[in-house]
Length: 312
Image (cartoon, rainbow, N blue to C red; front, side):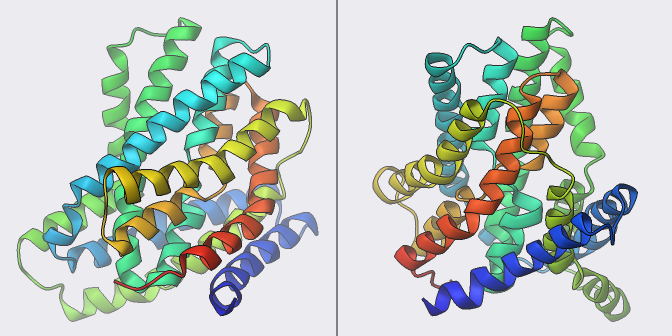
């Protein structure tokens, strides 16, 4: 119980404060967007660059971990599509959004801060590996949505994916930090202290921004698809990943726990962005993000009680 009280409650308390600030109009919609932009463009990149620059490459090359989590995400995507196809009459694009929401966790705003809180700076490595891996999932979802909507040929997705990586400050900061670490040089003290100072704002601000963005979302429409997405994401996804990392591709306890805890996160905000862009499952995605984030405190708390996380 102490793990829950000291780990989950403080994090979700910050999320709630962000939600309250948005609902009480302490932050306007423009203010919320500016806060998210600060997290993604100015706070998190320096934090991640500094962290990865000082991380041993051997700790990053965890191919079994990447493979196990990727397999779990692909299986959940397929399960989400198949379950929605059996239960609801949705367009192909709507089915893809269902699969996406069932397999994609809120990594930057919740998964990364949670693993940092539980495991210290070492918890960022598995989180960043998964966040980088999500680019592949984005490419798959984009390709499928483009094909079903007949908006573009499949071969154009590769170029879109490369551009997405190049303009994503989170991923680029990670790659650049790894590249600097390979030089074997230490960051100059003034640079290290500057990056560390602004980077301290990243985890709590990310959680606050998550709550603020939730205040802008609406729970509306048919609750069936949203409820299915929430159930698959919060319950089935971590269970499937647990089976994979403990029974199929057996990982060391730290890496196994990191994978399961990260997969237990609520539906990520990018699901709504994709749904809105392709005009498919918008209400279901919005509702699922709000509902799953609300219930995540309960499900993650229960998970931590069962796992009893241990530091590496």
